[in-house]
Length: 222
Image (cartoon, rainbow, N blue to C red):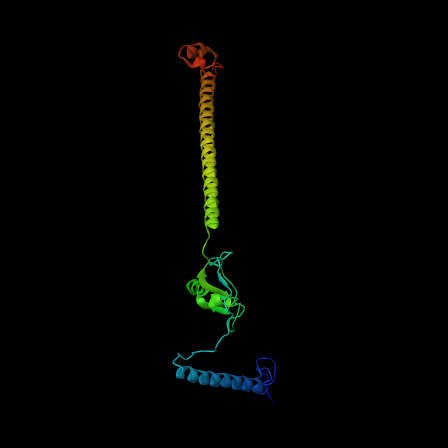
């Protein structure tokens, strides 16, 4: 009698296991061997010509057609800092792995330093069709840039002065409100003391209290 396995099937039944396509993997291995054979033949020719052999697969990069350009969007290297994320593609290649993924070169880097070095490298720029040379600015471009920076500096100075005046007005208003509050509290304490004294001494001691100087409490005189 066959015993039931942990997956609800017979112990001798192995249909739940992953099936491998032997023909597909044999075809992949054959293709890889052919590529390696071609690379070795190419390296032999390069050695005969006095050139260094290639270490890996040759990648046909487009010829650069433009100079190096400034990045328009921020890199946002710290956007996922101190966050918990679910790894969607832990064993494969491409996006979804932990780290920084370069869509252009289809590579993932484990830290921001490696990713930053890559996007500034010659290989990445070649993949974008750019060279490592920077465009030389003209006189008109330099003048326009200086005018823009001056305008930004002027706006920042105006905003700073406005903030200072507003802050000073807020401090003065707060001090005035605090003085008025203390004045009202002091007046209330005097009035409370006067009423307590009148209640304790009675009507007969009112004149004595006035002679002692308590009669002026609660006066409307300003």
